[in-house]
Length: 151
Image (tube, rainbow, N blue to C red; front, side, top):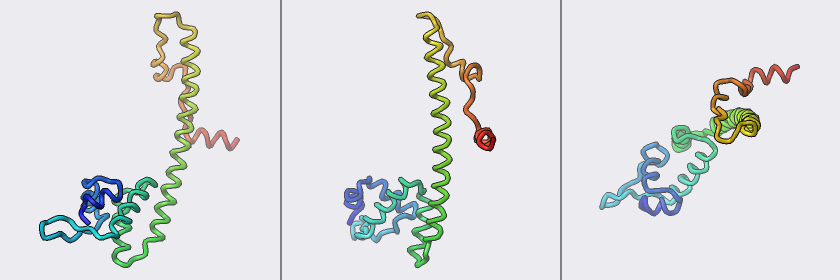
């Protein structure tokens, strides 16, 4: 099938198909007599696998490495598991950081609501000055949180 058909079947653009080929995700397909790339039916599953893996956090370079090993008869399963465990740990850290940011912003909103309630109409409340470290505490660092939990 041509790249446009592969793109249609997988929900990506023909440019994405060509990008995947350049990145090593899709092997270079043979060309028709008129020069069109002719992809195998297995390319559909490979593009769909790539789309799912990208959503989980794999990069194209990581996928190209894994698929290259697999295509050469290797068994990249342990590497895939290791990479996924690392992504899971990273995601957990990001979630913690987002939770800290959420607590900080909630506190900031409460402070600003209070400040605005005590600011006469038409007068500046100087909300953005809070970012200079005055009035609103900074979000706690991971080190401070660890120390607090140990106590």
